[in-house]
Amino acid sequence: MRSRRAAREWALRILYASRLSGNSAQACFEDILREAKEDQNLILCRALVERISSDDACLDEWIRRSVEKWDLGRLAVIDLIILRMAIAEFLYFDDIPYKVTINEAIELAKRY
Image (cartoon, rainbow, N blue to C red; front, side, top):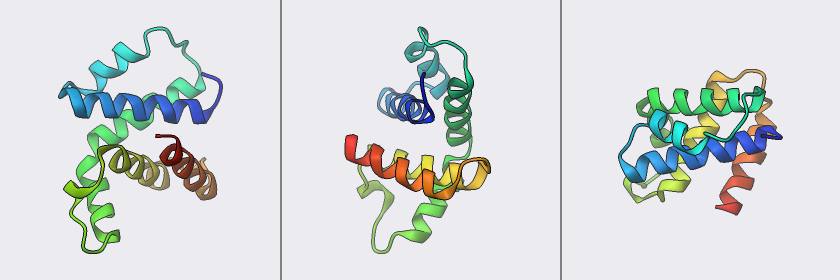
């Protein structure tokens, strides 16, 4: 992986595959990233996947408090995952500036 953006894209793909397949995020992580080399961005990807997988109820509560007149079930799966990723970065990854997290979430939403 060349950048944190790539790490975020891989994390998004893994979490989406997990959601659609019903398999654990860890199983999807192993399937999708077999060819990736261990580097700092892979570490970020793994940390995002693990944090989101373990704290999805907490992250969903943050989203629920922010959206008005919307049930989470109405959100597209990909949008929900992008929101979870951004909130997880806000809460648990102090080394990533908020502006970067917001920009990256917007770019992922545009692309996917």
